[in-house]
Image (cartoon, rainbow, N blue to C red; front, side, top):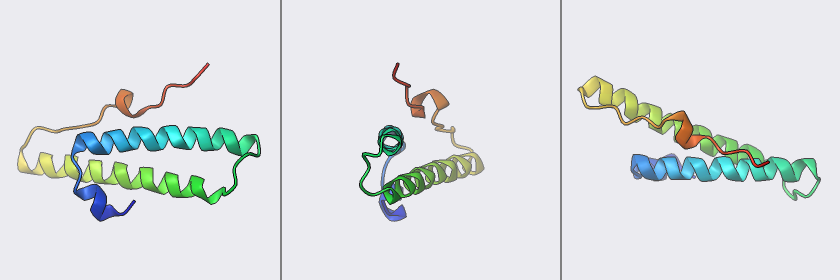
Length: 85
């Protein structure tokens, strides 16, 4: 995912993508342990996409604070993936 694509999204869309990427990363890690993953480099790509999403969210948060606008911050609970039992 390109940075320009992320910048065109709303905070809600970014949070949704962040949640989806985290879930995908969890599935890929599990598949890696069971040797079912075909291309392990996908894991690093997903990790980088997650970092990009978080960076854009943080940039927006800092910009809102500087402009005196209310801060729209993603809570940790929204972005964490629930672990399956």
